[in-house]
Structures are given as structure tokens and as C-alpha cells.
Length: 150
Image (cartoon, rainbow, N blue to C red; front, top):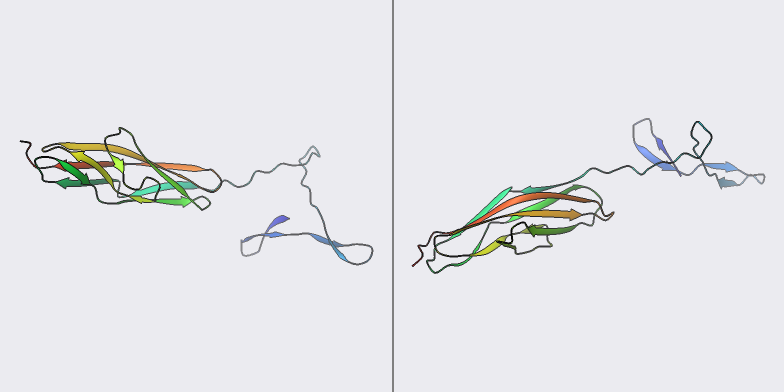
């Protein structure tokens, strides 16, 4: 196969053919050569691959003096480029909170918060595509308990 650019600019793969002595079409192998006559090597194109998280910060709050679990609003990671299927991994940087869906594209974050306290954590989401390429982004999560400790 060789790649050919059409007059409209599209890149298409084609199999070169020629006629043999019996006038039948047979495939031809095309070998590129460098200026020294050696077979040229080509690398597959590198696909741009990145990850975005929306929103970049999430927060949640409760109001219970004795403390309780608090959850943030949802964060969504979106892979841009790459080759699907994608595998997501949300990892806490400080261990102060946990992701409710650590292997999903969307998650919320939670922590037990004592009365009057605030818990903050930074999470890194890493996405891996079908070729093993990775992209990462970070998000800040904060939960608060406005209840006064007794």
C-alpha cells in the first residue's frame, strides 16, 4: 500500500497494480529508497492526544457538627485525539479524598469532613488510548463542613 494525496487534499491508501505476462493484474510492492539507495524508514504519524477536565475545580459542602461524608459536584474528563477505546484513572495526590468512580471518564470526589473543617485534594486523571499513549490533567477538589464542632 502507498498513500496518495488526491487533488482535493484527502490522503488515501492505494495498492499499486501492474499487468503480468498473462495480462492479469497483480499487486506491486513499492519500496522507498533514501538518497543512498537504502530502503527508507517511515514512522507512523503521531496523533495529537490530550485530556481536558471540566470544570477545573469542584466543591461540595455539608452542615453537620458531628461530621459526615461530603461530595463534590461532578467532573468530566474528555480525551481529545488518540485512538479509542480509552481507559481513565483518577488518582489522589494527597490521599485526603477519594474518587467515587476512579476508572470512569466522569467522577465525583468525597471525604469525611469533621464539623468546621475543610478538606482539599488535587487529583490527576490519566487517560490511556488503545495504542498505549497517555495524557493527563489535574483538578482541585474541596469539601467543607459548615457545622460547628461540639
